[in-house]
Length: 334
Image (cartoon, rainbow, N blue to C red):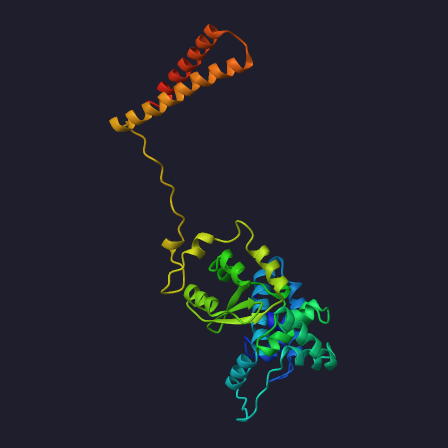
């Protein structure tokens, strides 16, 4: 069977360089700066390719989906886009910059908020000690996606819809569940020497160090809605899905778990053998205590119930104690 040209057959890209450049891949004009148009094209193409995500083209479709996701995340991250554009021959003026908007400025410019609402939001956030992103959501002035997109613009990061993402198992396996839950993050895949990680906010230095140690490369954070990350953690880190032993054993040097470190520890069975004189003496002392309590307990129980006289109680107690003694000799004193 001839190998299919997925770029031509599924995306309508004419024959030429393979793989195509990122702008051609997402079917936008070269050096397109409108991030919303880039994301819109990405969503359309993503939906098209997902139609083939089964059957004989399962591997090809998933590879292409991840390739498009990496392209979208690169072209919607201001710093990564500039670096890529320069590698493609684009020249920037020394004073040419795309100043980042704050969360509230972004929401006003995108007509989600009215300028008159800004002061009220700032007061609400300050009084409760929360961020502007959380404030607009709690005040029901913007939904979680709008607020997270605004924060992404402020932090000069890409926004990612995790329903469109297919995290790679190799990336997921190296970060244990306890780490992703503690930092509310999700490793996605490697792109140009950096690990893309979905986060709810600007990543902490602790998380950056953790990623560098475990993967042997720096991370690049992308923003996702907090609830979507929590749902993804529940989905991809369900009990039994990930190799926690391998993830926990990441060495501090290479950042990648070794095969020996990932191996599960063998259970060691206790050796059975003859008891020492000291152990025998100790067990006999314990046995005597058990026998005495069986005798006393039986007599007291019969007495409280008033079932028989003194002689009967003593005989029954002695019988029970004798039975306990025999059982201990057969099992515990050996």
